[in-house]
Length: 100
Image 1: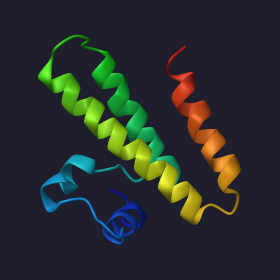
Image 2: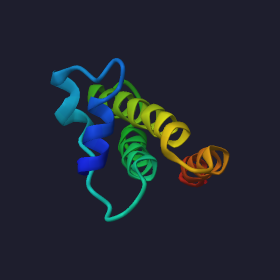
Image 3: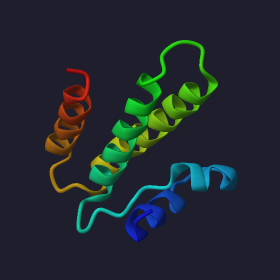
Image 4: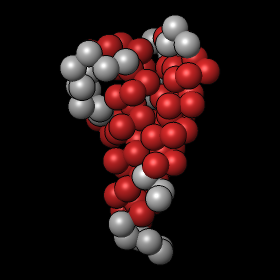
């Protein structure tokens, strides 16, 4: 996880439980904003969930991880982006582009 994303998550008013910290690991992406890194990680997890549809426990875990990461991405965009509306639009476009 990038140091910025780790610090941001730890500073949440209700931080993720310690047991989830490793589960929410995000690869550092150079100088990317926190919300971009979280979005890319969320989309990757969503893709893994969709790769095994049906009642597959592993897919459910990937889906839950995607939900958490994309929720945090939206929160980070609102809190850290100089243009939150554009950042949120980018997140929607990025997630939506993976569905096509």
